[in-house]
Length: 514
Image (cartoon, rainbow, N blue to C red; front, side, top):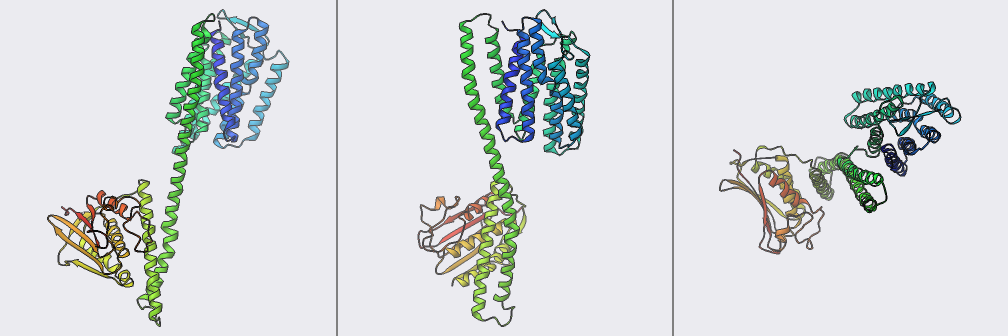
């Protein structure tokens, strides 16, 4: 039957070999390659521990101790190199000196008896090495490098940004566990019985750091939870199988269960990784969308606004000697620029809403005055189309509501613009009145009307009325945004129509401000 020391060694070998494969199968960044090599060295120690625990003679144990220390000798140096790489510290001479010292230890270990030359039977079953002066010097270097790396990690943790601090924190936590176990693994050399728990700590710490390297968000609970569950399950089944004294049906069942859970676990873990990668891709697209929103908000709006300003100077007669024909063209440019700005505003509002960036600054204001000023701005649009734009707003009364004035004006402008676009003959009327205790705004037109089957879907995203009779420039989200805005501010919005070619009415209703 395998000893507990051998079992811990094979578990370390399997977990570290898997982690090394994962590291080398990813993007192969330098930091991942370094940690992949580190995992290979720890796996070599696991193989040696497995063979040492199974050794039946002192000579055989000495051989496997030497093989195991091929990896162990480089572990503190490689980890120091990894920490320097992780923190962006470029100290080539220092790292090169550590590798040179490690090579000296390696040569002495493989080709002389100065490093390991004898073993002794401890705890009645395990051949543990007998320390030599050169081995003791290595044992002095190990904690020095471990303490050094932990100190610089702790120092960087205190001066890092939030995201970087999380990364360093996980690295510190993982390496502390791993090297604590690694340090304890030497204690049996000096007569302390703590095996095989140190190997489990080494493996756990190495896995934690490996995940921290692979995932930018570091140890996503879903990833860690899934992998930790299956790692524990696999280890449990493997240990049960190996501890069976003789071949039995129970051992076969454990082997089958282990194989099945490995297959299922790998599929589930892969699906979790895919989910995280998709989430990261969505976040990347969201960031790109935010960047485009900023670009559209400033870089596109500014030249269009300037263009409208120059066209306005010509259209209103500020620029002398402009013929009526030039003024008419300038008026079309002014209106076209206004349409483009409306489209940009709708796109930005939709994008902000999808990103959860919409905020409402509610305050009391006069809905009648707001509607009147917006309607005045659309008079040139109506005249260009040969339509009328009438206001039915009693200027002697105030219609005070509490809402975000900017967004209400945006909705009113969009509704007036829509009514003008969908009207071929006649005109548009904007009215504000009291309806019971509520304040109601109605925008009615003599346009193409709305079919009864279209009304229930009119305020859905990308929905439109009968657009076949008119030429439209739009995003198809204006009414959807209007409904979202108005309802978020405590109001109501709906549409009415007697049918096709019978015009339509869009109604906004707010409770009075208190």
